[in-house]
Image (cartoon, rainbow, N blue to C red; front, side, top):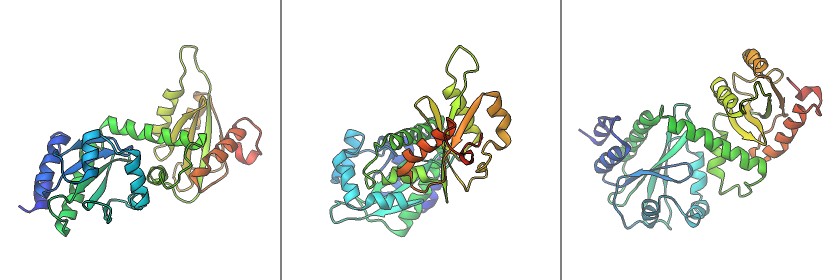
Length: 293
């Protein structure tokens, strides 16, 4: 069998470590998988003469210095713009590398798969086989609750940082913001929801947000300052600018939810402005156009 057929024949019920070791043997180069926060998940083993590979497998992440190197070499942009697979080349690199994304069942990018050309240079078969291996890992982890929860927390942290104005280096955060943009098109809207207390036993904020996530699968969510924040786009079938409740109006009423919606915007780095606008609408201080509930 050829390389592609051998990778396709790998059993996805084996653990990640076994799969990476098997794929590395087939492709004759080391392979690692790390999440979108640059935390190592698994690797095929062994140190090499590549310092960036060695840093990842020995420390479990990339240093800030290495991440800034990625920015300076425009790797950050190349990775952010790719939908599936990208080859990273630079005179500053010891070896070329190829990177592909791994997705969960909601098509959220949750991990990166990287192979370094330490032993043999990439050919067309290698790239096709590596892409198929990324698909196999996506198939393996897509329904894993860890990666569903990871994506939820990843979106939450980015939204909170944007609202707080903590993200000022647009080059450094380019791949992260690109992931937050995924699935959005045309105009985006910020929605701020107030959750009324239905009983005196506990705060139902997280519970209500989990229910909303199941209903609005295309939206991105965070909890901020005691309220739920949603980001949506005009492309989504769930979205109606003048009546975002849609078919879930009874759910909102039964759970004593009220909300405000911002005007449309295109730049996530301006989220604070539109969060404030949606909050103003929620509190009844905006014109009726933005007070859709």
